[in-house]
Length: 351
Image 1 (cartoon, rainbow, N blue to C red):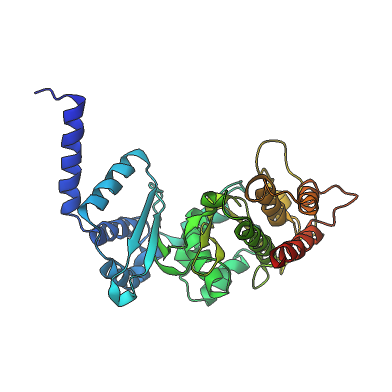
Image 2: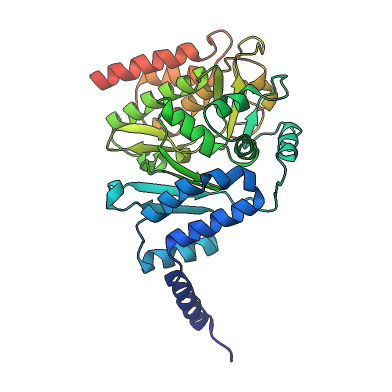
């Protein structure tokens, strides 16, 4: 029997609907966790009890919502779920992000550890600057914070967000609350729409966002516990705006260079863009100085080219241009421009 393309689409939708009707959302996440446990039992076994609490608290979406998600996954393989917890959890809104890795199975923590230590420095993903210690201080720090060693090594290898997001939230950084890490699925609070949706928002709102972005760039650079954080994907779609708290929130931490500033790494230096479009960098330049101004550069670039590009203010335009260009004659590693911009934005908001 031959079906027309239209009939095939209907059959596909009905099949998806039938499949999704018999698979509650919580069972989908349980199945994901079981598969992840096969990849690395020592990494994720300790997460089961907390994950079960989250699975049970998920309010089941409508069949129509599940159908739309199933169809979306046929087009875009990134698994991002927008969820709601039940009333006992005050109907909190969550985002579940799943990293599809596949093929990387580790039965021995020693092998996992060696795989990370021997991994070449590379742009993109998580990069921990080498400090000369066989066990990096960041690993020891996270163990002291209660994380299992195998879990730390695995997330550093594949997706640092579940670990780093939780730590930054506890230390007062503007990131979403982490509810649970369940293998390769991370449940975090919904933080609002990304900054992409605010390109034409009111002037005062964008000025306030700009001020918070510059403050965030400095806060990340100064870091915590002598660890400095450099984002390598400081873009509008990795930042959200929580309208309830009027706060800019960093929602993705997968592309990060982490520097151990407790170890002397050389003189502070300004970021020099490599040839090419967008933000280009050499990992060694991040790891070679304790106060590289790359976060400030990216924040200024985002404001100049996106968030504040149509605002007519000569002083603001000049400071943003100086921050991005940062000529040797006028640039004090961009940090001074950041402080001047924060002060100016405050004056504009006050007036």
